[in-house]
Image (cartoon, rainbow, N blue to C red):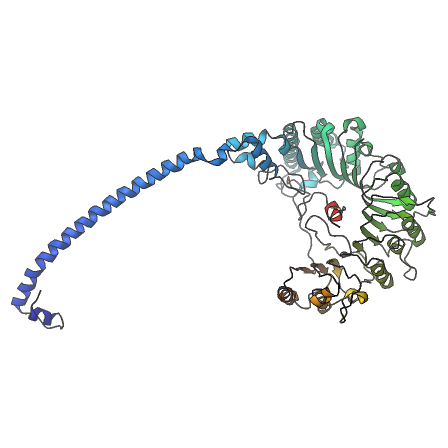
Length: 581
């Protein structure tokens, strides 16, 4: 509108005249009609848009619904699903009866997966079975009511478990079976009024697994020895023709020596055994073994006899003592296939030397020697350690594990001199499990720690001929306290130095240690900065003042599984790591 008077009023706050008011009203009639038309059009378009969005959602739902028919998962053959499901099972232990993990978890996704899982025998050929014999042992998680209600609760849980075991294993078809059976009770001494009832609970579990004994391939037992004896009486050698691997930890003191029917299984190749009293006849009943971990105490004499009858051994671990017998090896003990030898020695020094000196193992790659200075025979540091007798004959050692309390500083240095090809050094107990958990339990008595890190620290000259363990790539140690964090930083930095590498010294790849002292300083940022600057992929794990272990519920289906996901918690030889040496 081209009106000077109205244009002037738009620029000030003066009161308009009546004529101006009439002119403005007349002018606004047309814009108001146009605005009403625009708003009506917008409303129409919004309604149209709403209708289109509703149609869009309906169409999308139809497409999504029918796209399920076209899903590639529907066309995957059942044998492929079987393979996928099998790889969902835990790899380092047997699965337990829980809907939180495979295979039970897979059977809860849909009807097709349930049918596929239930018709796949391999999924049900492995099982972890915890059980108890006495309700007093299972108070954790049990309602605090009078004893009769607690007994009924316990009986119901054990009955359901035994029935579940039968159903689980009945799905395994003809597959070889792997079982880990753990008794949560520390002993079995039922009262007279309860003995029949508790014995029935025990036999229900055993009767659930015995029908499948002919297909036992891998068996793990952890229970009091008197409970195992009940199982042993129900077995015969003919019942276990497929058994190849046996791990048994039998707690408590039995009234008689163990002979163990399972040890006579015709195809047995691997044994890990921890029993309180082991019959000397054990040395005469196992010939074709390739793997032996014996945690039961055995004399040097019987150890020699045992190894003499197992010439095919590849991995061996023994706990030996003198038992007041004078040991005189009749001849050299030939073990041509032996790659790893772990000895926990509490015997007299002379007997230990004789035992190790007469072992001829030309392919030995790994020595693990744990000598206890608190043995009943005493310990004299003035004499050379028995480990030197074996090190002198083993020129291709690439891994060494030893107890720094049982070997003198002088002998440690001599071991390093005799084995310049060592790539992996473990100071203290060998770490356990696939994730290599380092021991965090303080020993009852740690009188001395003779390992000195400066012994293997690269000198300033960076010359290989003046460096102990020039091929070292991995070092693991537990409960260290006699060297500082600054000493460790110096050791790492010099082992990462490219100038040292040019002189032939190997680049360090991994340091894993626990310390029995507080942390003095955080060296991780300095190590990380140096490794990145040098372009080195380096792994550092340091732990100070470890805490107490956690407590589990004995009635849980996962009872007995460690933080590392293992049901067998004794430090067996890791075959995979040995084969990689």
